[in-house]
Image 1 (cartoon, rainbow, N blue to C red):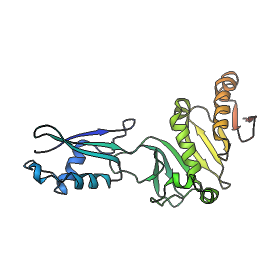
Image 2 (cartoon, rainbow, N blue to C red):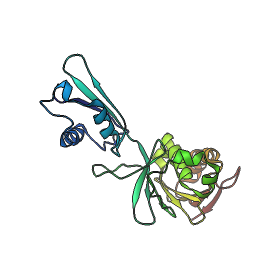
Image 3 (cartoon, helix red, strand yellow):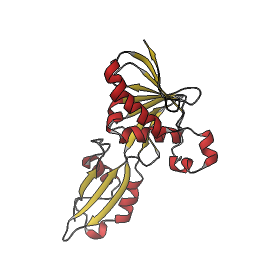
Image 4 (cartoon, rainbow, N blue to C red):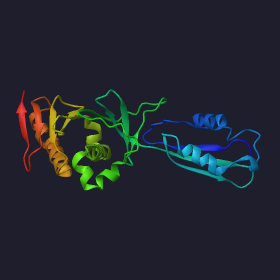
Length: 229
């Protein structure tokens, strides 16, 4: 059988692992080898080992016709990076889990800091979102909602680069273009606030100019309050 053919699905060219990395790890664990026969390959053990790696979300090990076999890997998709109060850092991934940093690659994603300290990698954000008691004390579900919205929107993924969490657990955005602070408030009516902000960018900022305002406040329903420089 020999060595496997390894293919990797990556997200926006965020290559936390490449084929050589995977092969090295498998050979180091003596799970593959150039002289391996079919009877030497433990497909389940290979899948279990690769699935345990922080960078990987899904693995499929398969045999083709003849002596060829392969491994297909899907990497996790970070959508934001949290800089915690204690100095540590981690990612939020697309599936709603915290993800440790990688030694191989730094993802260029939305950054978050301020009054936030998320260090429990066993915490699943989707579980928090489905638990009314946890939602009242946690902030990670709000960070996920904001990050996921920004990441999924073509305009905001280019324009919003940073989220600051203030002492009142309200959110402030720092844009790529312009020197404003965007006062977003809580995550309540999140979609409505983003829609309102996009309209203001496309209509209001186009007329007033990108450097006119110091703050853009979208916290209040059906209105935007701006302060000039």
